[in-house]
Length: 152
Image (tube, rainbow, N blue to C red; front, side, top):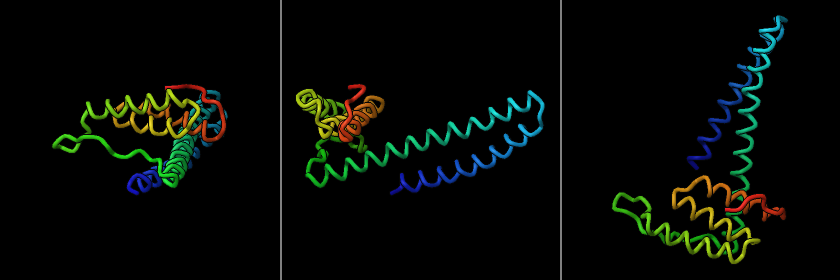
């Protein structure tokens, strides 16, 4: 819930930023001089790219939630079987052990989005977020019935 509130606040700030910066970009473009028109266009480009990035992340989050709900309904969400340090952090050796099992499951069933989802969680537990994201994208593509473009 905390992440959702944070995301909504950041989206609201981005919308405000888009309107504020967009108005300045339009003012620069209306000036009519070549330099200010180019700068105005560049100014307009920044919020467009930012909005696209936020939209992409929000779609990714919703897709992840949809898969998690479906997996939970099937009873297939990965259990937390990781050992923890006295400070509460995941024990690295424990995460590596679970990761090895999840990777073997995924290699045995490469077309099953469920195994890719669980592998993505294992990557996150092992603190490899980039590969975890790629594995989750593969799970999302497989769930949608598309052939995965990349593998872990």
